[in-house]
Length: 305
Image 1 (tube, rainbow, N blue to C red):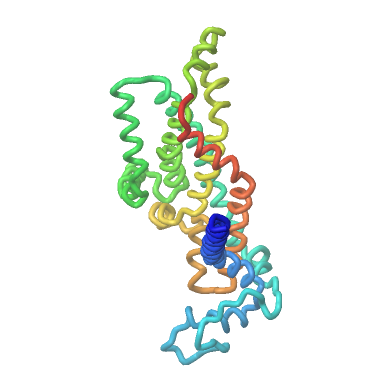
Image 2: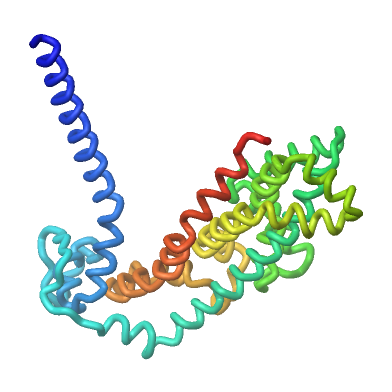
């Protein structure tokens, strides 16, 4: 009986501990997802309702001229009183700035992702296939550059862009992105874990270096390439500092991320609508490819067979 009682008590303790853990995790997840939910639902509110709920944050307390009612406290509302598509109509139809900035983002992100992976594949193959002190030194430099935040290399990039006379052009954003070391690090770690027996078998079959690279290393690094592409897209889709510094005299070339940061201080309703649309593409892309991203990251840290 004592043993049965002890087992029952331990089972109750386990259930209680699991329940507490689930409550904490659920609360944490709700806190993380709440800004996204508020952004999407508030984008369907009317301008007057948004002003009434959040105007206190953006209003000038010293100004006596207030055109609409502003509550004394900020009111976080999930369900709008009246669903309105006016903000989306303004952004997508009446305002050409949104579409212009959207295509600016596409023009920057797509070439950076494609060509950074192309450059990284060649560099990673060299690092994985050839050994030596020079190779180790170069790879250490790549890791050191990767660990540096972009703000540290922003001034050297600015000076180089000025020397190349590409400031205030798209190349001042695209070229530094293409030669970023992040993809090289991930793909090198993945290629280093490809068994040498496979390479030897390919050599016996008469494959040269180009064929080994194209038929062996690239297919076996497919998941890592996919995950790198998604992570690069997320990173450069949200870039703000680079365009603000490199395109100071050419605001027409600013991407959507910079446009979003600028309208936050003005049109609150438009900010919600633009932010909601802005999140759709990267969110869908990540949710669709989440498994491949995780597999690619895991393959870069797997134990070599």
